Image (cartoon, rainbow, N blue to C red):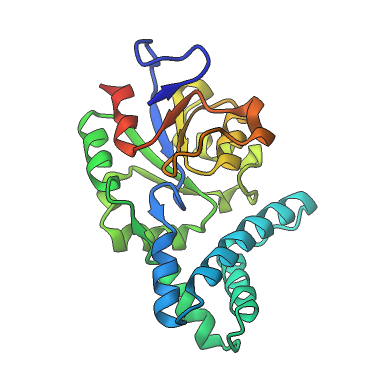
Amino acid sequence: MQTNGSSSKGEDLNFEAIIFDAYGTLFDLDSFQSEAERIHRGKGKEISQVVRQKQVEFTMTRDIIGKYVNFEVLTRNAIEFAIKKAGVRRTDTAVEKLYSKFLSLKPFKDVVPVLSDLDELGVRVAILSNGTQAMLDKLIERTGLALLSEDVISVDGAKAYKPNAKAYRHGLDELGIFEKERILYVSANPWDVAGARAFGFKVGWINRTKQPLFDEGYYEFRPEFEFSRLDQVKELFE
């Protein structure tokens, strides 16, 4: 674990809750790639990468132009674009088959034990995601994490996507917490880290791929904490 700025493990950080991002942070997007490859041999990696690229592009573009459409619709749109780009014939069945796999993403191996440990430490645990409530509920249910998360929050209630400040404010309001500094927000996505930091949360970046530097374009919003493994997060609460 690395710390940036003035915060350190030895300080009394006094966090009231920890909020995790879902996609790419707790749930492994490579598991979607594996399923896409199983369905469309030789094209799974391309499909998976394009789906994720378009999900992010669609959410940010719609946020900028003020035309909100929920993440379920945008994910299907992204899948549709990806299979066409990969040369797969577009059918409702082809889209739905891949969409169902996106609802069944596998958690990273360290997620269940770490969230269990945090739960035992009495830390309030939440998830804030761009996914719809229905998408998140299915994902949590299928991975057996329902009992480990007190609050699963969709930005759909704010009609704004992360990294829009409205999305983080919605998460705070749903938890009934009024001080931003009482939240530790954890994400693996640099744009999400930057958004949460700009909003005023204390932020931890899960750098699973061991990138040497935080993205230069967001450097002024770099996280207070950097973790290479999820189990390092719980050290702040021990």
